[in-house]
Structures are given as C-alpha cells and as structure tokens.
Length: 79
Image 1 (cartoon, rainbow, N blue to C red):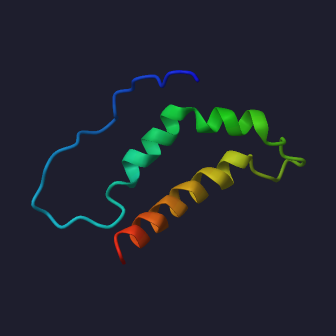
Image 2 (cartoon, one colour):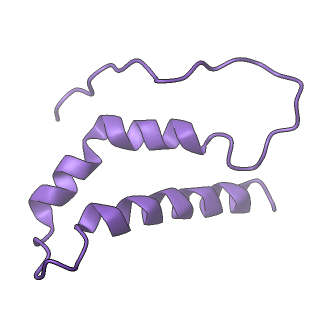
C-alpha cells in the first residue's frame, strides 16, 4: 500500500459561530479524494472516450462520488 502524499490545503480551516450548510465538509472529502490520486486511477482503469464529443470518466465519476458521500453523510446525521 502506498503512502498518501501530505498536501497543503488550498484554503484555511477556522472555527466559526456561523450557520454552515450540510455540505460544508464536502471540500475536505474532495481534497482527500484528490490526495488519493483518484483521478489518475480512473484515467488508468477506465476506457478512453470513444468519440471527440464525449467526456473522460473523471468528469462523471468524481462528481458522483462527491454527491454520494454528501447523501450518505446526511443519512447518518438523520436528515
């Protein structure tokens, strides 16, 4: 198993008294997925687009993974 590269987040995390949306932690999961090399893995494992009018697998799968994670988080939180 390869070690994860330590990355500096492109934003600051601070405590706040503001009301946050349910998706406030999604950016952390997105950075985690990025750090895992998910895009590189998808490009390696999924077939290339067959025509010049189609998208790469990462354009479909990455947003789907982020949306499913947000839905699972809301189910666990009881919403």
